[in-house]
Image 1 (cartoon, rainbow, N blue to C red):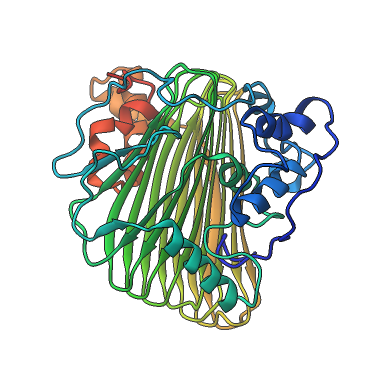
Image 2: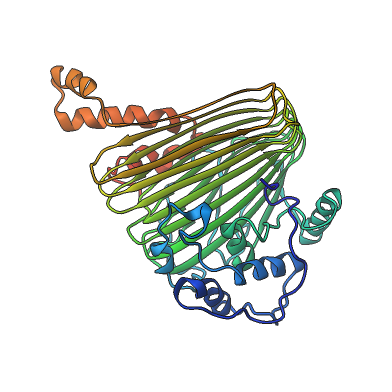
Length: 445
């Protein structure tokens, strides 16, 4: 696995001609580029030019692509290839942020930091400094792309966001920041594409609690690329809550690089989207770091919920604790594909990966594939997967205590969800993730 968007090689040439347009999904990416006025003549910074080229040369993902072979992209192809206009969602009715948490609203157009007072320890990275960081990363990697540039042969989601997103939110974190930061996007009932890009640089010893929230109620595609560099001894506690609707699509690509002694924990709760695809990609650049991943997704009706994770250890004594949970009801389909790479340099790695899924309908489907690729010979690694239904013995026990069947089932589902939800940042409570996952009255004030 290539380093997640930090030092991957990308063709440096600027596109000089539009690629031949095909029919249907093969033209969707170029149609989007044309709709937003991004052609070979556009004056773009080099990093964005390379992303433009990568997106223009690749059609919409399909089941012919190995990484997408379980994914029906029909819902994506149905999205109008046009950017959501800034403010198209109208006035947002958001619940108040948790006490002390700084909220940043991302709408793809307006300056997200306008009117926002960043907490002590967080500062915006100027464009010229960001370019210097890119060059520094590229030099350290022996050439190629620098920090903040998705690889042309890698994540299609990253290319989409990098090529099309009008703005980039780049933040540096120093010291321990409390109580935390919240990034929110809500496309409402508007139709179109909302591309978002976020870069985080945690200096050595920094600490941050970050919550991402993405919501949609219409035929929109929210494409998010979040990249984080976690310095030596730094700690990032990261959560994501995403609530969609019948025609909405979420594509979220997370590229994280950890330095020795750092700690990264990521917890997510996703439900309601016609298609959701979450791609956490973590690289322990020199090992000796700790990674903790927790995910929970629910799909119902004909929804598709995908989770594709990649973790690579490029040094010894790294640790990984990963748990993925899924609930599939109706005719929904849940997919989990988790790859863990332990090359020879990663001796004394300790990695555990577990997938646990609940099947609530005979028409629902669950595909789960936890996988370890181990070359090192001095490691402790394990993985496993289970797919079950609600246990009749547990239901009978609750009913024998006077709880009706529906309430008993809900109680068991609550217990199943709690193991992941309790690890979300405290700021997530105002979004009521449990109600969202159980399809109760959802928090859309």
